[in-house]
Image (tube, rainbow, N blue to C red):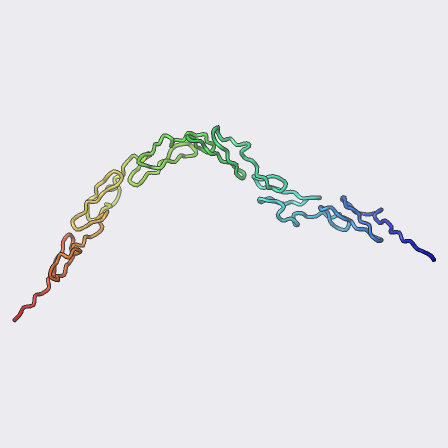
Amino acid sequence: TFFFAYVNIDDCRNHRCQNGATCMDGVNTYNCQCPPEWTGQFCTNDVDECSLLPNACQNGGTCRNTLNGYHCACVNGWSGPDCSENIDDCADAVCFSGSTCIDRVASFSCSCPPGKTGLLCHIDDACTSNPCKMGAQCYTNPINGKFICNCPSGYKGSTCAEDIDECVIGPNPCEHSGCKNTEGSFTCNCALGYTGPRCEQDINECGSNPCQNNATCLDQIGDYSCFCMPVARSN
């Protein structure tokens, strides 16, 4: 009796696997086990990670394929291998002493302490002295620190201290009457027969039923007339 022994020849001795691939011996053949960055029969083709990983670069970054990997070109304000790190713009900020720097994306802002204003909190706030009168709201120009008063109705001027004469600035605001200017406003002295804030409403003198014995009341300007019912006479 004869026995035959079969020995598998190691085909990996002269393998052609490249780029750090591992040769896997088979029966009269071999396969190349590629690292993640390479593909193909002999691991000679570069993997396009930008196509396989469409979200590899975050926050608007642009993916650029390279041999053996990829690179993210980040937009302004972001950094890191995948553009996920917000650059600390406060590291080089110039907010003045006493203010607080707030980091943003590709920018920063300064939170000012009381009495200071401006983009860098470097200007004295003119509103601190309460220059606006008559309850006007005070705003500060962030460029030069000067105050701006938002005047309420009836007042004008840089500090809202000047009364507006509504009776002379345009057409008479009162109807059927004379106009009298007051501090911050005006009043209307209504003519006989009119009422309302601007004397725009005709008073209905017939509203109180002044006519008697079923007479018909006719409203007039400041007056009324009664049309009496005819009286039947007996023969």
